[in-house]
Image (cartoon, rainbow, N blue to C red):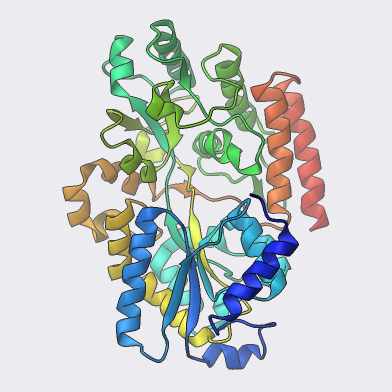
Length: 427
């Protein structure tokens, strides 16, 4: 059942006040930054992340009897963004949320709901020392960090080895658009799967992160949808990517119909656009292989960029005991805890040199090694105001032209770019 935001805010207010670290507003920010005591955190309801979160909390609480963490899964709602936004409005957000979408940071910041992590003496240095150059993508337009880059799921192309074998393909050619289309046609012609690939054709703003955006990142060598105050996607590169996907739909190699379930696991599609979190889901169900997303010219794997599919950690301004919250955030993203997180979930910590830092893990789990390499070349959603509205504007144009063929692809992208540029100017 979908709760309205107002009702949800009331529910959250009742549940979180009982935890003792949240209240009506942030109070004195300087005092809060030094204050220590009990805090509340939320983490994802993903089973593996819950298990990691519970051990992290237990490890902290065992050493900090006077600064205990109370943890829970993020409350259910239409989306985590809606739930968090309602908690900010109610003044009852937890201190830390280990499930903050980078696309929502600008909105939460606008609501006054986030604490700039630079306000801690070692905040900026900790973030940049841990994550390296990739941290720059997570700065807000005011130059501050309102999120700590935490973990990513670099998106690649999974393929079903049995479906490909049925189509007579042992070594799949998928690196160029022409090769990808030819391979897709073989798979469908052989009836090895109903469609070659099945990205979600629905219109939610975030769906473009799993069809257009990974290929756009690869084609452009790492461009974001918006850079330097202007849209980038109506370029020749953007139109190449969109036209590739239009051909996939036009030739019935992808489907415009909504699918309930997992088309890749069910065998309805022979490929999927997804990150390493899915490996555990596919275990025992699909004999899979993985390759980087395609480019028009077939760039070498070591040059391919892709979408990060990251979730980050943010500190929320309702938190009173921010000194403890900052210490917990550093503890939870330490080398040791990142290693435990990697082991529990298979997701890539957003830190420098993941492959070498956790070499033993990747030696024992070689399936994940390619994702560690890809994690060093990821592209995030642009951290700009009106981010979600910008993505929805793009998705509307993409759906109309690419998925449903109701408008010329180039014209649709040009018109969307004009609208996006106006949104950027308004911010």
